[in-house]
Image (cartoon, rainbow, N blue to C red; front, side):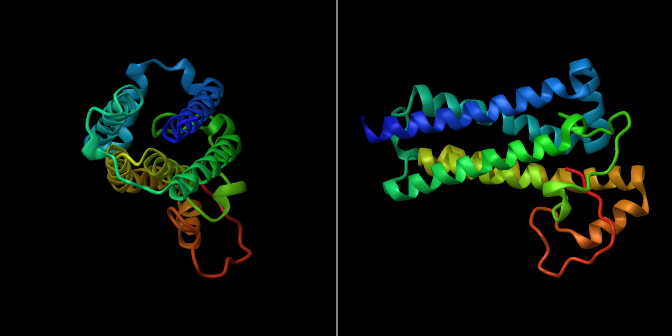
Length: 214
């Protein structure tokens, strides 16, 4: 089997895995009863126009990058970097690790998972699993996942996807935390002091009660 084709197959398997996770937990979420108009209104209300526009840009650019990589891989040869196979295999490993993290995070959230920034009915703060030490573990998992795309494909389009997604998070996370403080007050403010946004803090964890949210 041609090496590039093997990596393409592995890339597609990881892409399918991510899609299945999002579809399954999206179907279980109360969001499935909401219209696109309601979800868009909620997103604009809670995260603002800049974050929402960046999210749309990421989606459009990601679809374009996927089409070019999967169906027209030789159309722009200058976008392809000469990565050694061992580095691409690291990308494969990183990708499957990120898929496990995504499954774990979605499973922990359960019905609290939402496609847009919103407070679900009977919403409570997360205290379990990946939210114990990190406030936004889903964003961390997706940053790792999109990095694996770049390593596997060796295509510069996917590092642009990664950078655009990072910019979206920079704009989105403060808005999300403002929403959660408004909903949960001091409980979430105290939680923020003990956790990291994307990675666990270096300082030792205390024994007080913790709370978390994507």
